[in-house]
Image 1: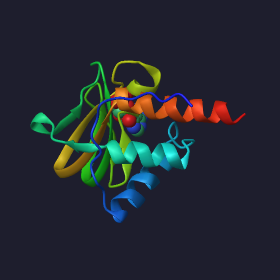
Image 2: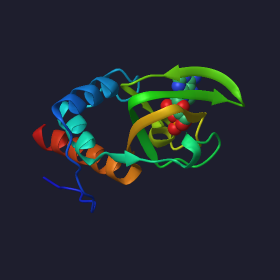
Image 3: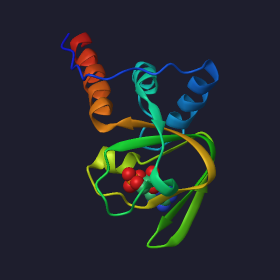
Length: 138
Ligand code: CMP
């Protein structure tokens, strides 16, 4: 079994956080098919995000992180037009990561938020390791 290793630290999460984050990942259209092992790994590596002026993601920029909203609300806008509000237990920023595109929208905090992020290289490591282990089992 080949393992891809990225130098990164795991940050402990409470059982409640793990339940919320898993539900967030499962309810995301693109990430919903991840295995339980992949989700657990991803969650373990997530760390807190503290964005300047509450802007987590800026439309049209390069994106290297995906996010999970634990508490509070964020607003999604496109060309300064309101798209939607996201609540606790939502994933955002997954599109640029999965499709290697620029950020498709701007995501801004509405008041106080608690948000967790995962870096692209760790996301890829988690995906690779599980893909390889599945191959090895066939
Ligand atoms: P990404 O393109 O990486 O960065 C902006 C994020 O906003 C995007 O990933 C999605 O997570 C989210 N997003 C973009 N467009 C929409 C939409 N129409 N509805 C809900 N969320 C969106």
